[in-house]
Each structure stands twice: as C-alpha cells, then as structure tokens.
Length: 180
Image (cartoon, helix red, strand yellow):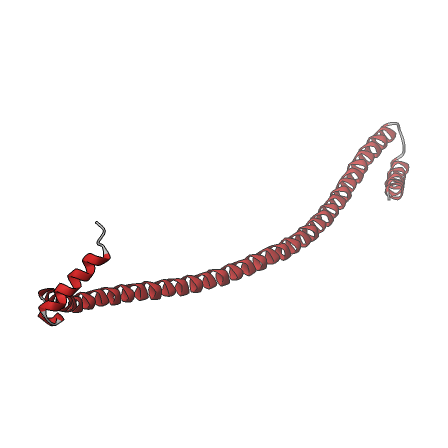
C-alpha cells in the first residue's frame, strides 16, 4: 500500500479545494479527541498522583517504623550488653569472694586442726600421767601388801613385838623412799 507522490498531491489538491482546514470533519474529530483525552486525563492524573502520594506516605511510615524498630533494637542491645557486663563483673566479684572465703576457711581449718592436735596431745599427756600415777599407786599397794605379809611372817616367826614394830616402821619408810 504505497501511496505514490502523485496520489498524495492529488489528495492534497482536492483537500485544499474543499476549503480551510477547520472546515474538515477530521480536524474537529481530532480536536474532540484531544479535549476528551485532556478531560479524562485530569481525574486520572489526580487519581494516579493520589495513589502515588498514598504509596509514598505508606513507604515513609514503613521507613519510620523500621527506624523506630532499629532504634529500639539498638537500645535493647545496649541494655543487654550493659546487663551482661554487670553480670560478668558480679560473677567475677562472687568468684573473688568465694576464693577469699575458701582461703579464710582453709586457714581456719588448719588453725582448728592445730588446736585439736594440741588439745589431744595434752589429753594424751594427762592420760599418760594418770596411768603412770595409777601404776605407781598399784605398785605401792602391792609393795605395802608384800610388806604387810612379810611383817606378819616375821612377827609370826617369834620376833619380839618391839623389834617387829621397828622393822615394820622401817620397811614402810624404806618403801616410801624407794617408790618416790
């Protein structure tokens, strides 16, 4: 469908012969089309602009909410980091206190053990002294019994009474001197 130059010039000449361009119905159809498009464009442009403004407002609100969430998260992070540092410091203090307390208890236990050993040693010495005194008393009792028996035998063997008494008194004195 190629239009030749000759056909185009014929159409233009025929068109020019019909009168000025504003008398042509095509001109008015084009004008009506542009007016109609222009009239329809205004509310459509408003709707599009309103929709874009609404979308921009939603995006702005989302950005603000995201910023608030970010700020809250950073604040919570800082709070938890501070709490963690405080907890670590408190744990270190507790460990240091426990070590000090353990050292103190170890020293106290060593002192208590030493005191207990001294007390038991003293008790052992006292028991030994008591056993020694008891043994000496038993030996004395045995010696006295033997002396009494010897005296009885001597008296029974015809010793005069005064000699027997002097012998008993001398034996008793000798026993006391020998045991001490």
